[in-house]
Length: 312
Image 1 (tube, rainbow, N blue to C red):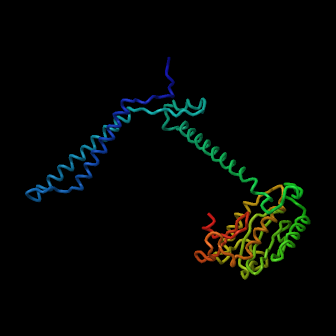
Image 2 (tube, rainbow, N blue to C red):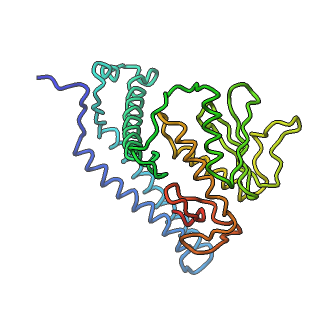
Image 3 (cartoon, rainbow, N blue to C red):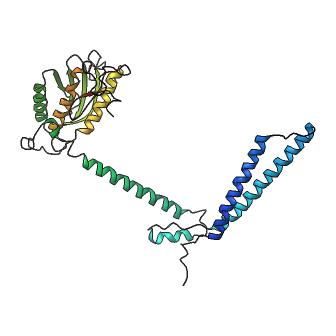
C-alpha cells in the first residue's frame, strides 16, 4: 500500500542527532566567548601570550564551523512534516515541482489560518456584545419594562417634527441644560447644549441618531467665522478633551436602535451629571484633582464621578 505523498514523515534518528549537534554547537560557541573573556594567558613574553591566544581562538572558531556544518547536514535529513488542513484537493498543489516559483499551497495555508483566526475572534466579540445587550438599555435610567415607550421604527429617516418634539421634551426635563436645535445642512439636526456655566456640547445628529459630539468650555467659541457651529475643532483645554473622549464612549454604550429617543434621553441624562464637573470629588480616591485634572469620568449606571485612572 502506497504511503500518502502529502504526509512526509520525520527522520527520527536524524532528528535525535540534530539535537545533539545543536548542543555541541552551543558548547563550541560558549568556548569562543570564554576564550574572549579570559583573554591572553600568562606567558614568558608578550609575543608568546598573543600567539597562544590566537591559536586557541582559531581552534574554537574551527569547532564552531565544524558543528554548524554538521547541523546543516542533519537538518536536510530530518524531513518536513506536512501541514494537514482541510483544503481538499488544493493540497495537491504541494506536489508542484516548481513550488519555489509558484508557492500557491503555502499561500493558501496562510489564508486559511488567517480566516480561522478572524472567525474565532469574531465569535468572541459577538459573545461579549451579546452579554452586554441587557446593560445597553433604558433600564439603566430607571424606565421599567411596563412603562417603556412604544418602539419606534428602526429606519434612519424620522419626521423632523417628531425629532423636534423629542428634543423639546428633553429640554424641559433638565432646567440646568439649554438645548438649541438647528438644521444648517438640510434635515440633519445639530444641537448646541449649554450645561449651566460649565461647558457647551455640540451634538451632530443623523435623524434621531447621534453621530458625534464635541465638548468645549463655557467661554470657548463654538462657531466658525461664517457663523455656523464648529464641529471639527477640539477644545483648547485638556479637561474638556477628556470629557469629549468619554462622551464618545457613552455614545457607543447607549445603543438601542429600536428606541432612538430613549438613547438620546439617556445620553443627555448622563451628560447632565457634568454639572458638578469642578465640584464633585472622585468616588474612589476622594480627591478633587489628579494630575491637575478633576474627575472627568461619569459611571454609565450610577453617574458617579471618577478620575480617568481611578475608574479602572
